[in-house]
Image 1 (cartoon, protein in one colour):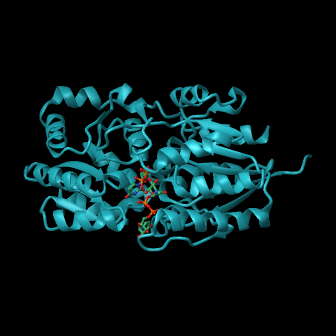
Image 2 (cartoon, protein in one colour):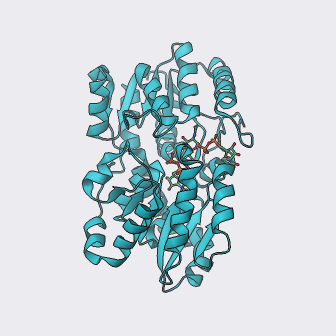
Image 3 (cartoon, rainbow, N blue to C red):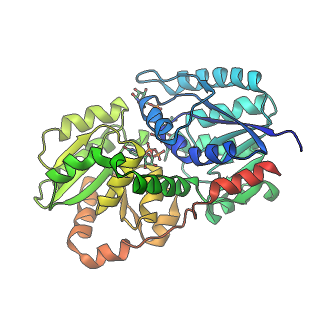
Length: 373
Ligand code: UD1
Ligand code: UDP
């Protein structure tokens, strides 16, 4: 039997961990691979929540997060430190996912050593380098030299082909977020105690219609965040709803949201939820208000209408399927579209249909098979 291929999977933030743990599980279980994991720990607490639930123990933990880290410092440190791990491990492939600073730095470190890069969730494009910022450029950089592009959808594949990417290197695999969602749903079904942490809020808000919310986009810092907070305040003036808002640990989010929303009776500002609890929130919410990428993929899969507080999206599939709608960061628009969903049953049911444009939950295995070729 041939030597197993050494695959080094590199990630650093919560969404990368969620979208890569299914692949790490699949690689670990497959004798064709010697699977190694390196976390930059660009996130700390929010990354550790995922590692714990998915039972992933990294071989290398670079512990890079510093409070309020700048993009320059993080990029520089990630490049140097991931490079050191690559020199020690000399993998056959480096796998990265998505579009964060860790992804770009990890991919460049591999390129500097002429190690082939597999890019998971390749080909997402908004067409605007400042929305989302800096992610649009991060993923384009990786897209210029990855040896294997795992596009989640046909739209993503087409975007890569339009950029003259070698078609032989582009494969539509689906998005591993659906694998993760299936995995966590099955786990919660087997162990309902995993989501008991939301029970108090569910009791407190019994009889109210739940709106789930997340917000963290860098390009929304400043006026955008203020507008979002203002919209939530106005929505919360209704007695029939409750907003459950796990607040991202980025201080630029935390500061504004705590200042604007703390103390409102029907707004629960809570710590980031671990993945089982967040999946529970997706299930009990009537609709989601978000600027997150991953939530735009998960909510349609569960048939939850999602109002996207961004000007553009690199995930047009949810909009095309009718389950997601772009509402930007104008407070009047956010309030109007939320109230429309709450008060117009036809508008609601037109959006509340389960669609799975992002995958069938078998993406990790497809990626393994591509890596084994
Ligand atoms: C990062 C990614 C973004 C991704 C998001 C997912 C970049 C530039 N940004 O944004 O693409 O969508 O993660 O959530 O790669 N912090 C903590 N604990 C944590 C995580 C963050 O305290 O577990 C705080 C720290 O003060 C840290 C700050 O948040 O300095 C910013 O973290 P950073 O990873 O630089 O940016 P995010 O806004 O989290
Ligand atoms: N998520 C979570 N707990 C939370 C908020 C989000 O587990 O409190 C999950 C969510 O299900 C999704 C991912 O985190 O899979 C999205 O991460 P985030 O919004 O931080 O980043 P983005 O997807 O925008 O890059």
